[in-house]
Image 1 (cartoon, each protein chain N blue to C red):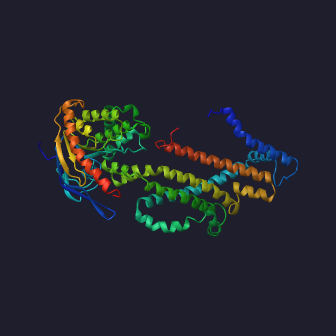
Image 2: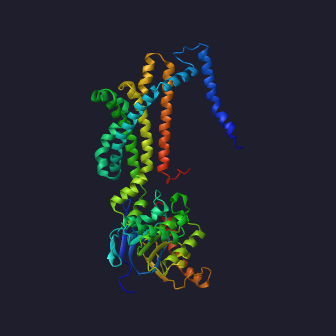
Image 3: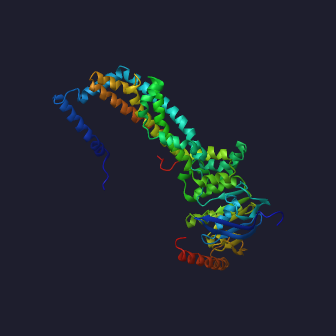
Length: 265
Length: 257
């Protein structure tokens, strides 16, 4: 891969203090994501995958270590690393079109350009007929489509996705996964995608980064070389999913053990 | 449960008021109660019509509404920016909160003597009292609205590259709007109460003054006619505020339809 990695995580450690007690959320994470790569962060809840994503987004800086995006150290949130949240985070007082236009207006793009870009993305995500609706009148899947259109409209080279399809039903989720891959393929965009869905990670990613439970660290990186579109019912897919499941279950067991021995925590 | 027909529901809704009015009319006509204590509803209606037809009602209503809107504009106009500042900046809250907490529990009506000493009689003390009445509901709600902005919206806006000023204008302000508008609705209701009291004490005009004047002449039918007018205008103000709120908050949950 030529040039600097899209995302470079170097010895990142993150410690939270809650009630006078220190919790090590991330310990010594090293990770490199190449430009144009689709990487999933996978692990049980409490493994720090969202913490890592938030650090890359610039919402919460690491306690030590550093994060580089396109070679530049991350110090604050920025539109070069656009985030899609599980809770959609659409602005409820703006219509679909206004939500998608927001990032472009912030960038002070000329009005005709904003209009054209918004129209194009609404079209691509099949939202055109909903452009004047408010988010409250849309289903969860539709809302997440709008959130995706909103980050694609600003043409961010890096997409950070925090369990974006976690709250959706299975059919809608599969639909959006396929749509995301369709948009991503050939776009050259780098995706860092947090999930606790094993099947989802194998379906989407070039590489699945399995994380350990508390403190969060990289347990194993599983490359997925199956050609796309992937068939989740194929034996190759299932063999891989089984392998990833075994890795995740080891961490899940530690998670459950922890919960039993420290119910107050 | 079987659904009740529309006609039946209307009939039920009218039954109690009609019975009350008929009983009231009968009791007044028999002379069992003096017309000064309880004038017959028919007489009140006639008096209300005269009051309206003479143009006096319009003049009173315009005077009272002028004071309500003027006072409300001053009170809300001061409370809104102060509330936004206090909600957004903790230093502003630290500066102003103690004094405001001391003043807030004092009913605006308790300021009447001071208002007359400061401003004399007429519109100025009324504006002061009404502004005071509208000020606190708008202030308290605006502060709450700014503080209740959803953290995820702030994060999303920051992530999309918005500056602090853009975030204030396009995220904090609109998300505080439901609170601000409900504060204004309460505020204008308080303003309407205060204007009546102010007109009974410090202003020689308006709906409040008119019913007090009618008492001087023992015109009970006119007192009640004035009260009905006050009630109808209050209802209209609240209805308009409700419409404005619904219109501005089309995006808000629970505002559909």
